[in-house]
Length: 377
Image (spheres, rainbow, N blue to C red):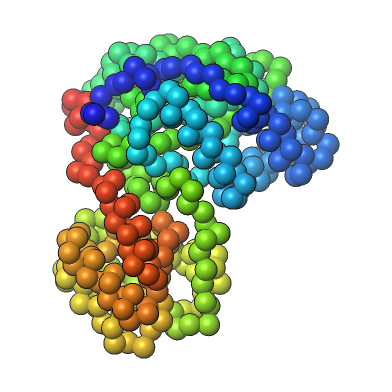
């Protein structure tokens, strides 16, 4: 199946789901009330909270997307949506969903979501978006979306004429129309479609979440498998770390992925992981550039008295599969833990190596979406 072409199964399609089984309005109201007990309904949060408090509430709700409870719910929900309406057999799910709270007159508060399309925010053409509101969505509180044909025309014109921000917004709004949905309905669309928000001039706050899936073989552009996407059933809480071991971090520039990533950016991701799991390191280590056989990493694994190494990403390992597997197996044989910060995963056993290789099965040539769609820039 060619996942890069427009498919009627996910092209601006409204589908219904069992609201009793997947009661998202009830769930998110409960979450919201744990933060601000004075909230009585999702639709009226703007009447009891200030814009600053709503922003705080949004961050709180966003943090819930990293919990096992939410992951359990959304895995079950997406399995139903994908199985019943899309039919992909092998696919990954977005690791952290986006929760949106669109209050009335949000433009005056600096909260308006600009018009854009998936390929402008790093999404690959193989990805599919599932947009689920928790409140009634209609008119200006809804998401506005353009047709595929209009989106193609707008995009090429924007490239040709180097439109300003305001020109892009004006042209996108001319060709976009609102979606009308009720709780119990969701909206499927692909990455080529221009979409965004108008200023909400209704009298209710709109709540929604958007998440994406990646079928095996689909292009992902900047949203890499294992990091942005995870396997169904994968949970952060499964990571166990002995912080008393001897730990170092490791950075390098000898893979297609890691080559363009500056050292401070790699170490920023690594440091966040170490802080999250309370890992105290002995030293920062690195690989000499152009040494694409990774002699430094091999030495740290086999002969440096190290128990654990934190690496930015699994994509910082060798591009060559055989060499990658050789190093991973050496780590297991030498009882050296490898932890990959971007993917929140680790290698301590042969089973873990299989998990890493399962992620790499979703890696492909991942061509530029603009080239695939025939845009000239």
